[in-house]
Amino acid sequence: MRRLISYITCLVSAVILLAGCTISYKFNGSALNYDIYKTINVGEFPIRAALVYAPLQQTFENQLLNTITRQTRLQEVNGNSDLEMTGEITGYSLSPQAVGTDAYATETRLTITVKVKYTDHINPANDVDQTFSAYRQFDSSLMLTDVQDGLCQEICEELVELIFNATLGNW
Image (cartoon, rainbow, N blue to C red; front, side, top):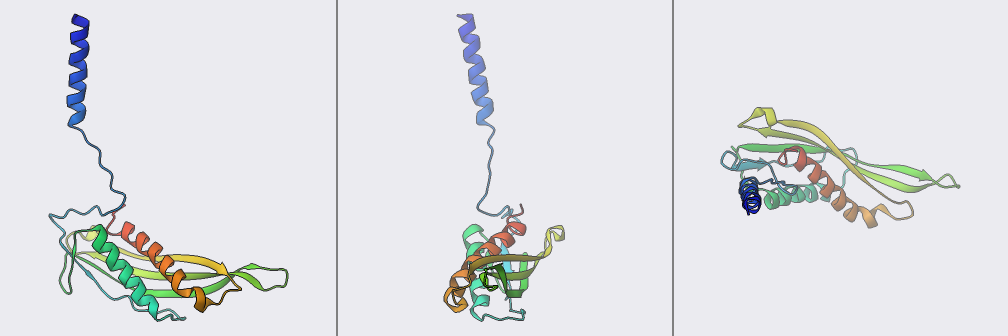
């Protein structure tokens, strides 16, 4: 009987101890303290690349704002803010990747590069000034105009994820 009481006492103590401990992981959101950070100013990301695809700027900016809205509780403002994100699209390039027996490219790579300046007005140690790049390959027999919208959407999604994780995600 004493052994059973001792066993139950240990079990109850372990349950109480473990109930007080919780482990929390956030893989789809920010690591911001919302008591401190309330606002963000996201500027325009003009295209400064040699090759220009006009809808790219809007596609990228919309994806960035949608991600910030979905994954944070920050209010997007113009002007003074706790956080600021600005930048430019510095690269939009096509390059052959695979060459067939006829010496023509069989695959082409579309690469988009974005330079981002992230400023934390409360804690400048969190500032980021970095260039991000992502690409997708497509069959060279396809016309770029036929696949461009879809490729740009996919690349922008990847770029925004990289940027979010390096800035607001605080990984």
